[in-house]
Length: 259
Image (cartoon, rainbow, N blue to C red; front, side):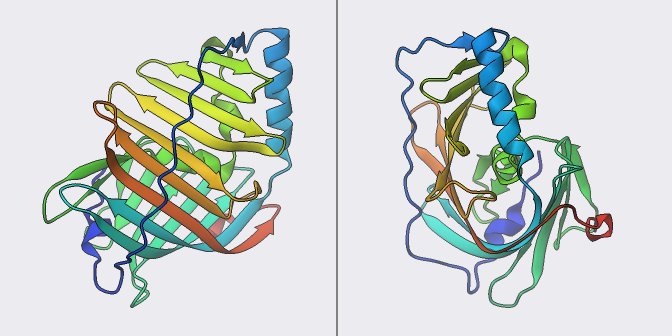
């Protein structure tokens, strides 16, 4: 994991007042799940994979808002550019200061590892596909952001995570449940695909939910992520991403990726 203090240190011209929506965690209740190895499970997951195959590569621009709750409420806003290449799974995100348009950080991933460069650090940080930690430089308060959740929704490459040995499905309710060592993932689906992902990590002691807001399309126009403590359910932070401009294409020229 890497600490992105630059996210929270850009305050000039980036503060916003409207709070990010508090999205709820869903209750699965007593639901009977089918194994992904069963006939019912295989059929349902194959349908999700076919939906993902219809997606395209794209480039676009977006606004991102980050709301923190401890030690006090703060809300910051940045602009961003995104590139996603479907054939390779590559995604690149560049965040810029809204007031000056200055690049403050760039994140690249191929779906397996992450490379990150911030304006305040000369070297490029590399890590496996995992969480990113946001750190407030004034207080030292850190918050885990489940970057894989955001990546898989913005790339719609979720089906590759549904390994039969740890995946269960409930086709009637449109739920996919993945139990991995130390963490659980719950996917909620509709006719057009996945609209909500919940992540519960006992190892990191946090829970997160990411919802697609509004019409379900690819890439989603608006996503909201909420991260809470597993201990008392208190909010740690929320992230809202709103797409402003999208250009869809079959594939992207690979020279656009990199630092």
